[in-house]
Length: 325
Image (cartoon, rainbow, N blue to C red; front, side):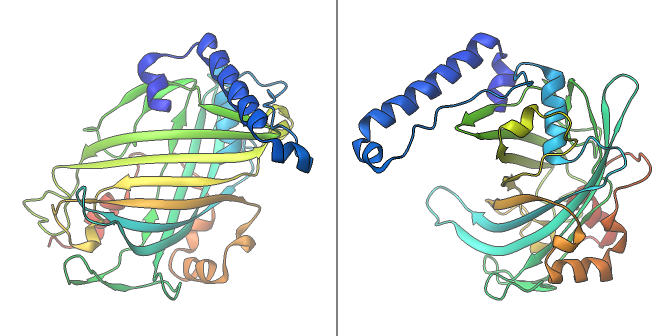
């Protein structure tokens, strides 16, 4: 949906038409459901938030920061994610679950003189066995029969300079697809609940040259798409006294094979189906994840203190820590 807005533009008439369509659809559903009426349920009439303009770039920018981090410059915000990762090969091969992933990111936001925000962020995540739920250090790949050493996620930094209009890019390399976007998110309001979303579709030159990394490289370029969703009480959106909104949500990801899977340029890709949640502190992490991070990546419990470029993805980290294969 965000890509449609970026390609076609966004105006108040379209937004209002969408709200009318939602109201009409809900009204039709309620008329069709006599059983629901007899049971005492009420229509989920959409409510627009007070003190928040869905067409304001400033309101959207600050809402995004409140959902995914915090406007309090002294606060490190922690976000948890838990995923199941599937293989997708062609149009006729059944999609299969491969392994799980669980981790967290820590961010801090700093307002700049021009009204923009710098996001200081890092993230780590650990791959787990589907059956046992335990973190794995090696993995038997059912797609090619190879036993591989697992490389867990530890990306530092994953920074962003957020503006009312900004280049949508990852920032790990100069050779990447960049799109300018106005900071206007697709919103859905149902009853007392607000649903926000943020879509990213990127590609960049792979740091793993396939001529040098035949087993690890996905090819000449890395392609990644990520789709995040948040839900929370609608009243919190307009309550700007709250520097942070604690949310639940989802995160879907489409990406190339991971380098440590040793799939090379084999046809296919990965799909991630994930849950995300705002945490109030590291004590809310599961004991296994917290203990593993404390042992291997203790510095990942605090947001970066300095602004560093370029960013790191798992591909850049893998190239820096492994020999070509």
